[in-house]
Length: 274
Image (cartoon, rainbow, N blue to C red):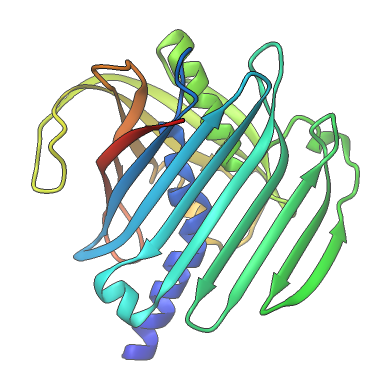
């Protein structure tokens, strides 16, 4: 039974890390006078107080960075300890498009240390991938296929949605993603306003903008937990604005079904970065 639970939690953590925790990058958007914002969440999965996350977005005049961190908590951390950091670096074009130049991930489980770096050329086309498992490194050159031009990583795509929300106040969009192996689309639907009330995890209350997010896996047939984020099983996001700075941020995240039950993430702390 212990082996089965550990295997299930491992599948949950490894599979969802690229979507759920990266998804939280949507919290960041900036205005003049503020270079970035740092955000903290608690993550509940089924009956478990499963994880803590810290997320940061920084914006300069011509470039940006998105960094997200996650660490398992409580029983999750005892049975399957896991920590990771994901970062996206790139430049900001004149039309406010975020163009990825490098994506990197670094994760540690009880038995395995994994790293991955994805590099892009000046046109935003991914050109090669460096990966390592327990220090065994591998480089893979990515075929220069026209359909990959204009694609990006998931963190940058979601940060792009934050820019859109800041500028026009809604989150309807379809963005093309390429993770170095597969292409898919991140689809966002705008569901209008909804009132949030405080609970034991979050003191935030008031009007929020509700957005729905799911993955269109295109022609991929992989049995990966990322594909559980479908039109039938999407992630819901509630966006609010800080009263003093007027910066938008995610107040809550909810997904109905994961291998261990519902997923809920609640904002616990927000701070501006220099």
